[in-house]
Picture: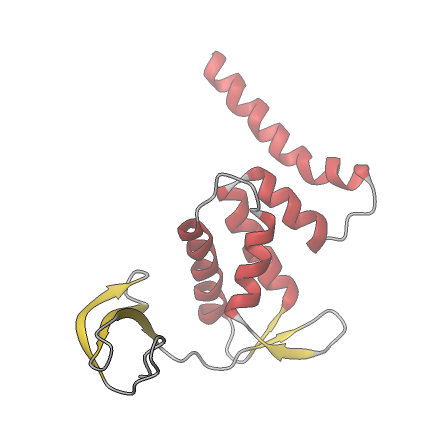
Length: 160
């Protein structure tokens, strides 16, 4: 492993521990040349699952692209990076368990919306507005109506 500081090619592992619920290993390393420390992560190489887009184009499923979309929906919301990573891992786990080599993009979108609905309602609506291509305010109202009904039902139960 090349040192990110001096680019020396000799280091030693100081500490190793499981990270992301066992899906990766975090290693603390120390360069034997410049003595600086840095962290690396090791994870299983995932099979190249292809995403089948709406227009039929196939492209590799990219963790960072998925994370970026979720992070945009959570922008300026009280959502931590760890929570975003949890949604990403949840989506990727679900895709891996249900699909082998190809997954329709709509399935990924539905999984993301499911995760965001549990995490943050505003992030959910932001994602849904792009994913479902809302054209006007009526589309927002239609998407929000089930959430509003559930909140009213919950408030009615508390009052009784």
